[in-house]
Amino acid sequence: MSDIYTESLSRLIEEFEKLPGIGPKSAERLAFHVLKAEPAEAMALAEAIRDVKNKIKRCEICTGLSE
Image 1 (cartoon, rainbow, N blue to C red):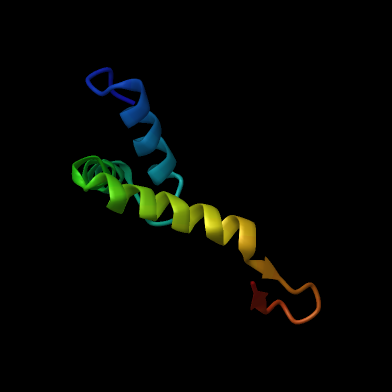
Image 2: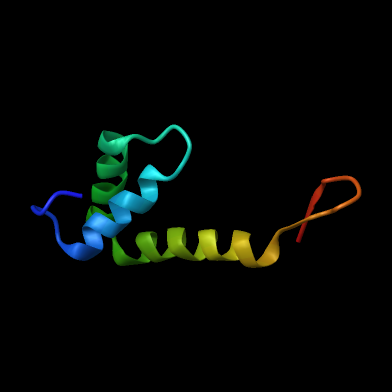
C-alpha cells in the first residue's frame, strides 16, 4: 500500500481488498468510512465481524448455518 497512509490504515485497506468484489479504490473508500465513523459505529462493525466468525457454524451434513 502507499507510503502516504499510516501503517494501520494501509493494513485496513489491504484487508478490505481481500474481500470479493472489492478493488483498491473501494477498499480505500471503506477504510476512510471506518476512519470517519464514530468510535461506537466502528467498534460495532468489528464486533459483528468477530461474532460471525466465533458464533456461526456450518452444518457438515446439510451445510446450513447455525449459531
